[in-house]
Amino acid sequence: SDGVVIGTIGTSGATLQTVTGTGGASSYAVIDGGATIAFVRKHDLHLFTVPITGGTATSVAEVATGINELLGVTCRSTTCILAVDPVQLSGPECAPGVFACVGSGPTELRAVSLVTGAVQLVSASPDVISTPKFSPVSGDFVVQVRGVWGHLQTFTSLPRDPPVNSDLYLYQGLAP
Image 1: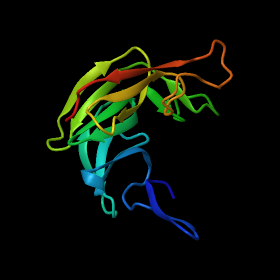
Image 2: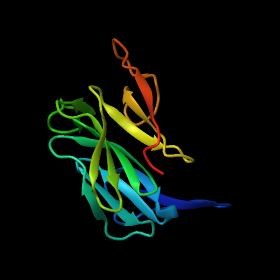
Image 3: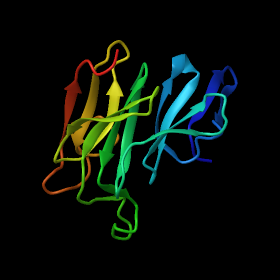
Image 4: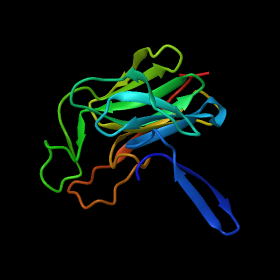
């Protein structure tokens, strides 16, 4: 089953279960002191929440429109940052066997208020942005630009000529 998985590790091994309501999740963040999961789904432009105990997912906001994907979410306090890219993940626009292809459109970071659902532009880039991650101790976050999406790395091991390396960008003070 797909979705966010939680579990425990004991002396006899790990026990895992999918959180009901998170089916199709492609990125997530734990919020509300561990009581709630904020997440996004492949081919869906909404930010959702669901109790960590499971239930029906609730849409917080439609983060983008058009042919885009949300390539990561991170949350701190009552603010989530999402990467919005004109990328199709194994969609019909891509050649057969191709994991993802990049189209034209906005490549942005957007902030979403978990209280009001308001969506605000944080930054735009000509390159694909992915994997935003808040610091565990401040309102700063790091994001990857270019490269292999979803790994927060500055290199690629994929056989490409020329190599498609990435950069990490730090944004400061966006959440309490």
